[in-house]
Image (cartoon, rainbow, N blue to C red; front, side, top):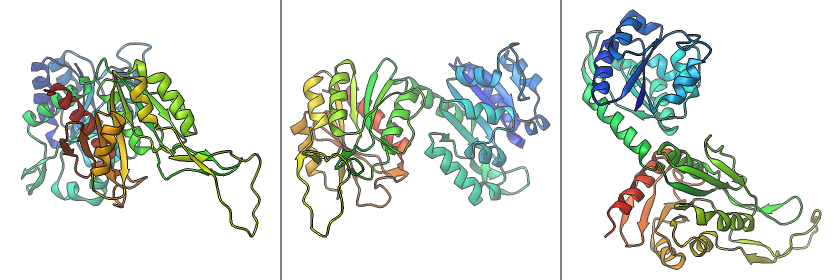
Length: 396
C-alpha cells in the first residue's frame, strides 16, 4: 500500500524516520512530505535515503516534470499519516488552509487521514487545538492520542508522540477498513423528501442528509462503489459517489426499485415522508379565515418495495424513533424483510435531525443488538459498516 507520511516541526520529528522504516517493514511504500519547520529537525535527504522515494517540501516541487505533485501524491496515497502533527498543522488542517505542500496535499486528498499530535502539554489541551481535533474527527480523520511523559520543554504531561508500534497498528487498522468493501456495490438513500401541497408549499421533515452523506463517505473510504439516491438535502454528498437527485417519495421509490437489483447492499437512510397530497393543487392556495383540511394518502414504502425488487440484496433500514425503545424497529425488520435496522432516538437533542452526532442501536434480524455509543456521524457510519461486515462473516 502507498503511505504518505507528513512530518511537521516538532522535536519528535526524528521519530518519523523510525516510523517510515517500520511501515516499510510491513510491506508499504512510504513517501514523505516535510513542512518548512520540520527541516529544523530532520532533512529531506534523510527520508529520501530511508525510503528510496523523493521527499516533498516546497509547494511547487515536481519530482516528475510536468506533473503536479500535490495532486498526484494525494490521489496515489492509500492513507495519509501526519506524525508528528503540531498545533499549527492541526489548526491549519481543521480550517482548510493550504499554505505549504503538506496542508495542500491534505486538502486535495479523499483518502483516510491519521493524525498523531505531538506538542507541549499546555498546547495540546488548549481549547483551539482540541476544537480542531474534534472537527477533524467529525470529518473522518483518525487521531492517535499522544502519551504522557517528559517533553522537550522539561515539563511532564500528555503531549509525547504516540509509540511507533501504536501508530503502525492504527495504520494497519485504517488500511484494513479501507479495503473491507472493495468489490461491493452499495446503494444509499439519503435526506428528506418533499411532497407538494401546491406549487409553492410542501410537506417534509427536518432531515439534513448528514447521516446519509456520512454513510456514503464511510462506504467510499472502505472501498465500495457507492450510489446515492438523494432527496433535497442541505448536506453535500462526498465526491466519488454517483448521485441520483429526487424530490418526492414516489420518485425515490421508483429510482430505488429500478436500481436496487444490481446492488449488493441497500442502506435506506432517507427520512421518507409517509404521506402526500392526494391531488396537489396547481398554483398557490390563498389564505382565508376558514380552517383547511388536507387530503393525504400513504406514500409507498421504499425499503419494503426494494426488498421485493431485489431479493438477493442485503437490506439495512434506518428508523428515527421518538424514544430509545426498539420494539417498533424490531417489528419493521420482520415486516419489511430487512437484514438489520439502525434506530436512533430523535428525542435526544444530541442525536436529532441535523445534529453532528448520532447514537445508533443496530438491530439484526436474528434479534441481536449492537450499540455505537455517542460519536460523530462519520464514526457512527464506519462502526455501522464494520458491524454489518462482521455479522455477515459470522452468520451461522
